[in-house]
Image (cartoon, rainbow, N blue to C red):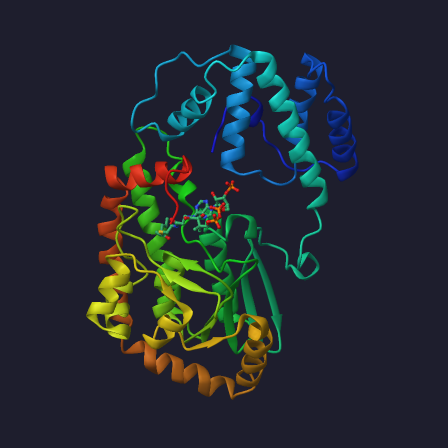
Length: 390
Ligand SMILES: CCCCC/C=C/C(=O)SCCNC(=O)CCNC(=O)[C@H](O)C(C)(C)COP(=O)(O)OP(=O)(O)OC[C@H]1O[C@@H](n2cnc3c(N)ncnc32)[C@H](O)[C@@H]1OP(=O)(O)O
């Protein structure tokens, strides 16, 4: 998201020592006299040094405080309905009302100081050591003939960015050719995945909506196509709640193991969208027409046990022993004769491949239209303005 002012020059990558020094100096600048212009300029530089993206909500706050400090209250006309990014920025600035410039400057400095402190302390991330090079949004590891692809944006509930869709496709392509017997998709943190990153809908310059919708449909076709064609046994290890496309593609997996903390939610109607991931075909086949309609049309959220009873999940494990039990099971399966396993998978899948590709194409062409609808745009805007949460 291209936010103006101090946020526009966002650039991760400075060393922690300079970061900590500046955080400390900013913190010390919080005196009873309020932040000076020099503190403000120093905070603007500090923003550029943050390593961790603070997220769009915080970026909007920074933008609003920056504008209020430098220009005073918002008195420009509200951007048009299709100008989603500028509208969000305007709303954030306008929400500050008549906040005095000095208070806005102090709030900006305080916010950057807090961000810098948490940035310094969050730099040791789990699994960093084992992370294979080449992926920014995933951790991909291979052990015991199992390749594990772990979605790795825990702070964003593993919401799928465009880059993440692309990296998953690359990781699947590599795994289809490596020595592994079984491939696992899982999530880092408390969520399996919150589905499509709704920010994907916010980056579109005015006038390019149709082109972007077309590009999105092509990306989605290729992404789902990778799962349809994947030649080896594919296992989903559902460590927590799953939303949207992370649920719909489960119909294309061979095994789905879930923690009893997981939930399964496809709120397409609420989002002004429609089913994808071949779920309009696989879900009625798996759970029957009525149950599929309750999920795909009415957005009913299933517990792991309900999803298991309906055939979407293979087995549910207590969260406390989930990882241990699942990985013991998978290690045993990975010792099965590799070629026999792969041939069995392909015999099952080949019967359906043509149909699945046709369903994928149809779903994407419907979605391409949906993404341009007011219903969809309003739902996305509501989420980012925090009026709506699933
Ligand atoms: C191009 C291909 C398109 C394919 C079509 C796919 C369609 C779908 O997948 S539809 C489903 C889309 N997903 C959603 O609508 C979920 C939206 N998220 C939520 O409702 C909630 O975040 C939650 C219920 C998943 C979790 O709520 P909570 O525990 O309260 O956590 P936060 O909301 O504070 O989330 C933390 C952080 O993560 C950001 N985030 C979470 N999910 C998404 C998302 N899907 N897209 C963008 N951002 C997401 C959230 O905004 C928070 O960010 P910060 O405020 O910056 O910390």
